[in-house]
Length: 215
Image (tube, rainbow, N blue to C red; front, top):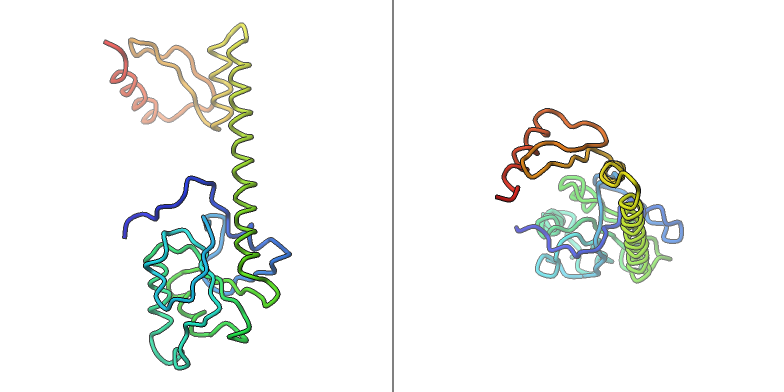
């Protein structure tokens, strides 16, 4: 399976969606943590959603597709494995009007395949969940644009100071939280700022400077 074709928009941490009190979502299976993110929300009642997923989705379902004898066979294992294979990020199961509770076999399958499973309460609509995802995504995008704008302004201000090279390097090091270094055309180190990199990293940068320097 190729890497999911996720959109060029900031992902939404699943924890941020769970923190929305208006949604009252509850995670009941699968891994959790800040590293779990979603890129969009999609609703499907297909028994095999694989062909309709692009990857990174919070897949929402009310379980209309679940047959009556599903709990005694491999239905849920097959269903969850296909979501994982398609790159789905999480599964949201709507409680009511089809199912009063989340099927225990589905919970077990999500645990086995390490797919986060969310219980969507009756008062929360799937469209409301999708809207919340887009709202969080818009907020993340705005924060990213603000961060880039502030960085550009600080670099421009640094470049106008009496010591522009040192000032720009200090700003770069501060913004990236690391080390910034300027090499001359002949490969010599002219200036640096921030936390010094290890010998292996600095040596690699010197080699790179030698490769890209003009003839």
